[in-house]
Every structure is written in C-alpha cells, then in structure tokens.
Amino acid sequence: EVSMGRSETFDFSSEGFDQVAVVVCGAHMEGMALNWQLTARGGRLFAKSKTADCYRMYVVPAGDGMPERPALVRVASDKGVSIQCEIWLLSTESFGDFTSKIPAPLGIGKVVLKDGSVCSGFIAEAIAMDGARDISDFGGWRGYCASKG
Image 1 (spheres, rainbow, N blue to C red):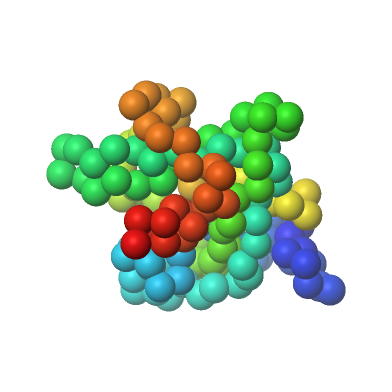
Image 2 (image 1 turned 90 degrees about the horizontal axis):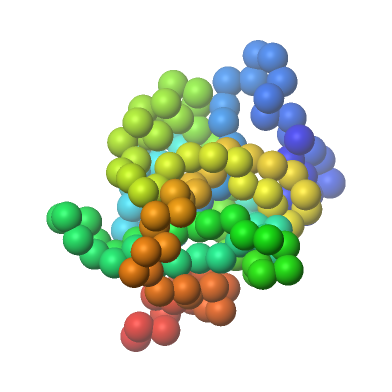
C-alpha cells in the first residue's frame, strides 16, 4: 500500500491492478535527462516524495560510455538520510521493458518511503560505492546537479 501523503492509499500489489509504482531518484525524475524513458512508455508521475531516512546517495563516476549517475544505497537507519524521489506509474508490460534496460550497478529493488510504504525502485549494488562520492548531504540528485552550476 502506498499513501505518499495523500488521503487515499493504493495497493499496487492487488490482483488485477495492471500498473507498477516505480521510485526514481535520479536522471529519470521529471525534467531530467532520462525522464523520456518513462514518458515514452506511458509512465505518469504519481507523487513527489522522499525515502525513509535509511539511505545514502552516491555518484557513480562516468565510465564505460556511461555518464555519472546516482546510486541509492540502503544503510543502517542511524547512518542514513531521507532522499528526494518521485513515484511513477508504469503498466506492468512497460515496467518489464524499462527494467530490462537498466545498466549495472543499478537495478530495481524495494525502496522504503518516508511514510513507511514500500515500492519497487532504483537501488544500487554495493560495488557502486567503490570510487563513488557520497552526495547524501545534497538531499538528492536535483540538489547535487544544482550545486554544479
């Protein structure tokens, strides 16, 4: 169930529900460079939110033809912060197509939101932290990008 601060809640796992809620926290957010990958698949913004305070965000350095990108990693609650994110809705078919094209060390897992709900969303393998810069103090990818001018 997901409430995202709204008065209504949605149980995206219920039988017959043909959409998947996807948490994005980087270049797939509205107005960012990769948002087209969601909108081209019929994705629609459901809510702007924050993660629970058990995450750190890192910048995976550019390399292997990939630009620098954010990596959300779950940590012990006393070591994490809340990170800005968005929840997008995709059809189950589009979700499968979308996730099949995510390059390592990023992937899809379960993300805990500030209201305690859990959704599928971008997470990173631990190896993403090797040589990566911790940008958690910026509050998220938008804050980090804005700091670069």
